[in-house]
Image (cartoon, rainbow, N blue to C red; front, side):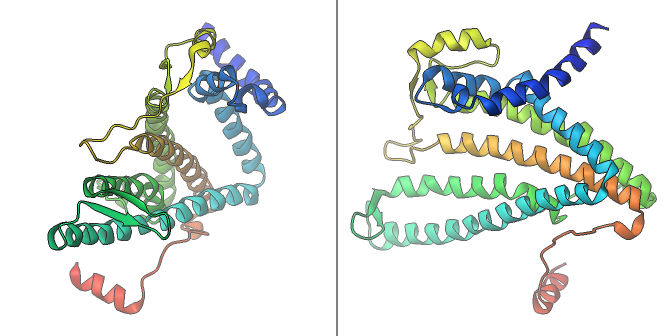
Length: 296
């Protein structure tokens, strides 16, 4: 009983917490103030923040059930965001290939120890730095193109039951899957990734078990300590970017889980003719499609 009361109390308080955060941005966005930065770190992985997001989901869903056109707009907006981010990030794959070719030429043919990029005051690093930086391009593709691939239907799936059931049953399976599997996994990844990120950006290290008062006490000795350790003496020294990408990945997957739930509900309500409605999928040209068909 106490747990149920706690649950609904947090939902009710979410509206107050959201309004207070919006009307007092200096308390958590003024990072020149150490206490404000610690509040930002605390609330980013807090129960309060979760219930603000959860309450927003409930309100939007309730309104969308009444006005389906509004919910379709939310779905299209979130899917457009995933598509745009993925289509841009996918170019990192080409950059990775081109940079690897340049590294091989500079290292094997010209025996260069350093590579410079740019005009005037060029960006100059050891060859090993550029070699290790290739991992960042790979991380960009993996983390930022994941939801894009989901929207495009490109993830591998094994259909033992799904493929033989009716349209409405499929949509129910999708709704349950998005809320029971996809969203919770993204939430857990966010919780681990959030504090993992900040432990490599500031000291004293914040912990998920710290209370707000404890973090505010730590803020007296707070200072930036951005991770700059490479795997080799002259290697890539911005590994904190991988932690940022991990958190970004979790946020994108969580939002896509919500968008997929809404789409599944709308397709369930409107019937089979709405399957794939407003879905912005990339299309291959005739020659590309024929080549893919021949490969398969």
